[in-house]
Image (cartoon, rainbow, N blue to C red):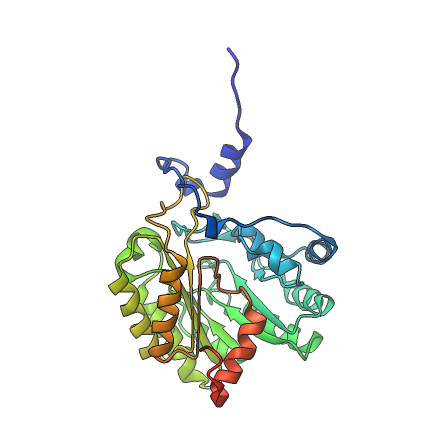
Length: 320
């Protein structure tokens, strides 16, 4: 008898031990509008080399982003700080889960050096959830933002943070060194939180965004959701209204893509026409900018979107 060992299954089990015993859900074939050709080239190789040189993690790689080739070919990489292991186990996410290691005190300087070498005009800094830390990693965000502003003073900074659930004062710590854009994703509609985002609370995340704007009205606030998890159209529209009530400026909407058969199944693929409809509706509700397409991701085109946000605030309504 020959035993066939599939190393991919072993790696998936090690990466997501909490999902290892779940039944597989077949992943449906992607429609034509979601097929992306992977590319390589000297700029992508240079971006990869800079990331490796500084021993950094990127959400582009860890989350399996379909836009990696496009973004890295423009020297845009979204840095993921505080390690590669998350204390949460969201059903949609491909980032490794488990017990994280200690924070690297040199990481802020390493991120800043990489940002300077890449010559970025705008950078997005995100992180894993660090429920093990007393402040959820808030001070580490601040140190990273300060290091970037010292090494690359011309670079605007966007942070995509965890929810800092039960970490009193964490958001206030972050906003004491205000980023140019404060981003926190709701990810999905309230009715799906227990299945899709069980460690989070919808109204806490909503209040986080509202409070960030209250702490510094000049900071752009941003959030994103995914379609295809099982939400209804009415629920999406309600989320839009909730975000506008929290004075959120920018909404991103993209298609959920199931990372492995162990992750939350894809309920459906929304069409490009549906995404365009949501974009129009979002603008009519008062968002300064709405990015809505099957391949939209939180940090996709973040550089150009930041310029459009500023123009929209100044009265140009660039989002239209």
